[in-house]
Length: 269
Image (cartoon, rainbow, N blue to C red; front, side, top):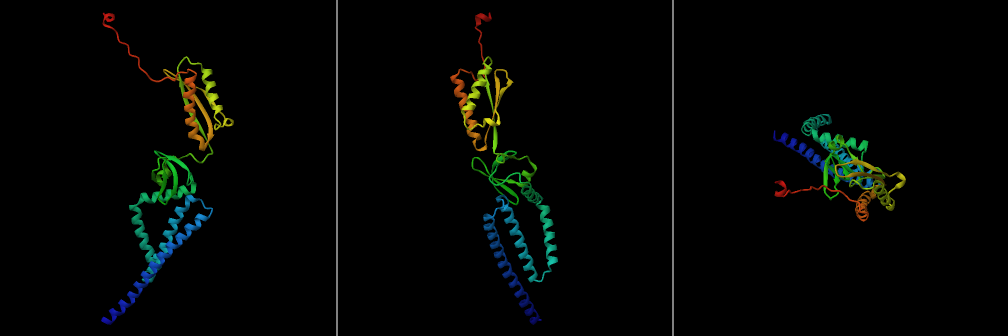
């Protein structure tokens, strides 16, 4: 009896040792291959947007192969091992259905490619520069330098505004003047401001006209085209120029105010 136990201990002890060796070596080899893949991806022409996703998938598949190989050393049939993993995967999948939804959404984003790494996007209440597209999340860097991890499912099911995909953007402005102001004079001033700004692309068209009559003001719409990278500079520059020139030309920019009149007691009597 003791001899039989000794034989079993030796047999399974050797198998267990071989299992651990293969597992450790295989795990280290998988990590090495993933690092090697990462270096090659950086040198390749493959879109950087999918680098993180490919590395995650490669790591998962390689480690899965290591687990199957190690299990066979212990004498566990491959079909049985896969069945066990499938059952465990189903249980985990039910518990992590949101994560699976994010995973599927990540694949959808990589296939449809509504944005790439480096693009400035906006979705719902979040906006920022895309840093990476991961297996479950997309990393954004906001304008005030905050890192935001947005679930892929959120991006896949919400509208996305990509500010970087087109080379030109339109600057839309509304300027208000008081009633009684010469309309043609205002239009002439605004056009002169446009012409004097070299970064405004006049060949793409300029729209200017009265857009609305308010209670105490008349609104002028001004729409001009600029290169994407000049958007904010031109937008702020127009505002500054309008305030300066309107002041020089005596054009009143109306603002909300309330007039209070007090009757004297003598008049009331």
